[in-house]
Image (cartoon, rainbow, N blue to C red; front, side):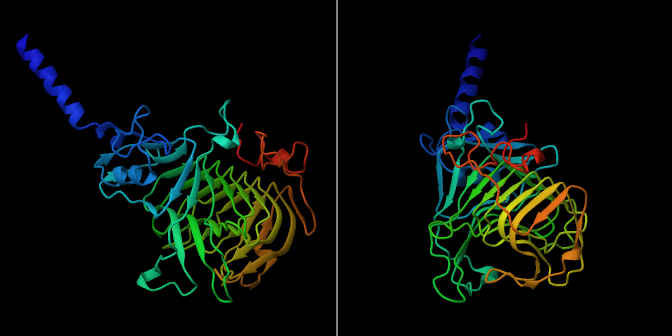
Length: 362
């Protein structure tokens, strides 16, 4: 009896002294309002910052799924949050998932319950160790591991003056993956919001490597939405589907590194500057289906970069499949009632709603 009692005391002491073991290996809960980075990371004892969640993932040893649940609230990123575990291994079925605690398809969800990501760090990123020649850049959430899902977040840009003078572009990249041989990054049910005067969202998703899938997202007044950046070989198994692009003052899709198997379907693009930007060599062609493009200045460009959009490209590089409607002029009705569950989605009955675009999957 005394032996059992002694063993129980030892087990209790081990739990108290090591409260974060289970949280590090499985689910991590984050709450910016009542969390504490010394907490266990459980639902009852959440950590406070996304930085702490990333630290725990990066320092873990082993394998298996890890889910980070973000409560509603404002997540101000004063430095890049990088997920780059060395000794923890994910797989297609055992993923790293960074998601909202409530998702758009949940019954009690509304837009006000989305976790808000805003970058406030200095624009001092130095590409390849050199000073940025364009006036400064920063990353928000940087993913440097394969098999990752980001879901249900409201992602803003950074409160800077983007173009202080000719030749300068001060910019933040909210979601980035640099690894050219990484695979399987899915961004889903996220709302990317920008304003080129108050809070420019320069480029919502900048992703290198293979298997980049973006679905059921809304890009509202961002400069650029999605860039397939670099890859060791043309980026295969990439998809863009069920997204709503509204008022991009840059371009909707940059297919620089994408392979020709890129799937673009069930998307709606409204009032964009440029619809599609090809790599400068224009070697690849891309197939589109079941999509509506209503209102644009240029349909296809090639080349370009942070300071410009290149030059006119070959529109024949876009192979238009069934049910693709392209209108040079046109606007769509967007629900701008901030109390509406359907806020910043297409109004019911508007052309394009039959394609199922936007935050909801059901």
